[in-house]
Amino acid sequence: MSYPTDRPATWFVTGASRGIGLELVRQLLHRGDAVAATTRSAQRLRDGLGDGADLSRLLTLEIDLADQEQVTAAVAAARERFGGVDVVVNNAGYGFLAAVEEVTDAEARRMFDVQIFGVWNVLRAVLPHLRAAGSGHVINVSSILGLTTFPGWGLYSAGKFALEGLTGSLAAEMADFGVRVNLVEPGYTRTDFLRPSSLGLPAAAVDGYQAIREMTDAHLAMPGTQLGDPVKVAAAIIEIAVRGDAPLHQLLGSDSVGLARDRLTALAADVQAGQRLAVTTDIG
Picture 1: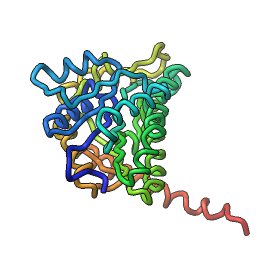
Picture 2 (picture 1 turned 135 degrees about the horizontal axis):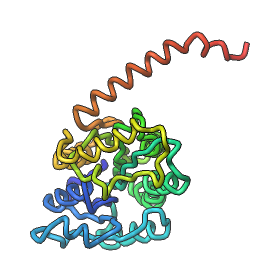
Picture 3 (picture 1 turned 90 degrees about the vertical axis):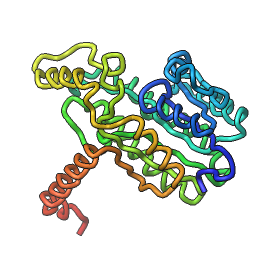
């Protein structure tokens, strides 16, 4: 069992002050669950929830996910306040649009600090308690760009591809301990993900990537037109935890389903096209 049926659940949610994370916290509080929410700005989280929100079951944790000590202390604070943690949602992240050549070392490390090392810090802090309890649920928020790639999204996809690999191994490791693990892979969702305040851009553009500049401009004009509904995405994440029967890879959004199918077709074609050479490298 990963989700308690005899009491409200306690959730630990990262990246909770905007977008899907904020909507998830809002719905969880409305359900009567308890939420430990990490954010870089507690004020932004409270403002986002609005004056009508019941904050009595909310623990706001203003931390840097890249700092292991801060993360460990945050998990300890959540357990002390609520008596434990049932569901962990690693949601923190941001977009970045640039050619691979344009990404600096600092920009790449900053992205991985959030999308991989921050997640790893949370997992190191919470998994011993979930294993000891013999229950719990980890939901890692990836993206359709963790399964496929586009020009200009190399850094973001690199982080999400790494998260997919980490999560697949984690799911197998946790199976014998009664801890469920899922990935969610949304398509374009109508949040502020593509707004200038949330989307990372290269410190210095390189001549020759006009197509990426045009794509960046198109994406910056996209907010308000994305297909995905953040309210429905948050509700789907809750359903994944409550039902406990979702596949490891849970796509969200019809655009995500379409792109995943295209990727499967392309991968199958690559396997077929490369098979003759592949089988020549065995010993003997």
